[in-house]
Length: 494
Image (cartoon, rainbow, N blue to C red; front, side):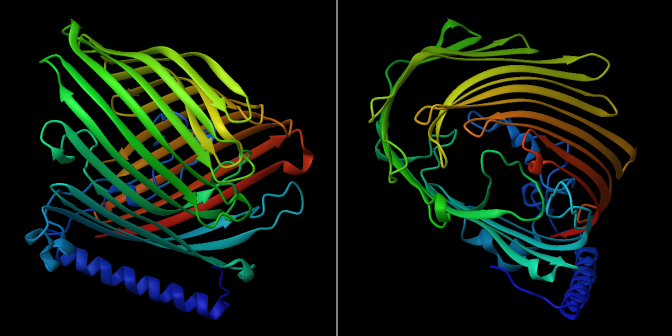
């Protein structure tokens, strides 16, 4: 939804925001002993806080970071909101959080054009609220992040954005045995449903490419009954069926729906090889159906041997070796070996040195290309003593099985965190990405440099300011651009 605000209205909104900040500050000062800091997930992450490695994540996820803020955790005491409403009196576990931020930004190329660059001052007003409640067999979570963008010159571009996520999980199967037990020690059930609004980028886009972003609403439903039985003290048998449905509700020309069922079984062997080595054998069958004339349905089978080993206190190894076959209904087949590998080490050498290497193969559905096979290499090192330094390099290949496309990525990320004072930090990061896209035959080089200073005045109030330079070089001339951005942001949290 877009709205148009006059300059007078923008000034009033600015004054109201300042008043809100002052009132919030007074509340925080008077109730600091009972307040609890907001979860770090509600606020923009640090430019050097890279997203974790995920199987199937596009190579340019490293460019998908919010605008350069850092969040520090506050004291773990009772939350003011929870205390006022006595929520813990009738719910087993409850947590709430609320934050408000206001940012003034100067952008010298808001439309990211190679020529005819348009500059503007942009005011961003953002509220972030979340609620999480859990019972022994059920968990509910709600988050809502509205953001108002106010342009000084181009008021017709003013926009109110809504980002939300509502989820219900019955079973709580993640890492626990708290699923709903239909038959004790044998039959279990897990159900989850999530409705969310999220940013949408095409294959050739990266996050933070200008202030204008498309959004889609997505609903994800999963139903998972399964049998789990400990055959012996060292072995576990697990077999089940999972139905999943992902529907993109308002994605316009990209309107798609994927649903299917997955039958899987596993036989887990614990400590049979050695005390430090665990493994399991897995076979799975998946049927995927896309309600779209653009894609074909497909079946996928996977058989694999998975191993995990802790070789001493400093070195951890993981590995998968197996076979994979994907068959589309139109006769196209992708078949071959499947393997994953990972090495992670932690060493104390005048500080803490962490290194890792990983190779992952995975499959997922893509809005633009259907069945997608992803192969990714990653190598990284992080060192921390007084300062923190990090470097990650990666190579990725995305194969769209049905479309016969191959997209290739090479990238590197580096970061530096220097504490100038106990509550003041200097943050510097750089990112580089090379992308080759088919069938567009476009070759792109992205590069970006971030630098900023954060002052954490208290666990509930912070100010950060910084500068970002980004550029894009493409073999298609009108896709090139350079962009300079300067900002200052004030954040208050309850």
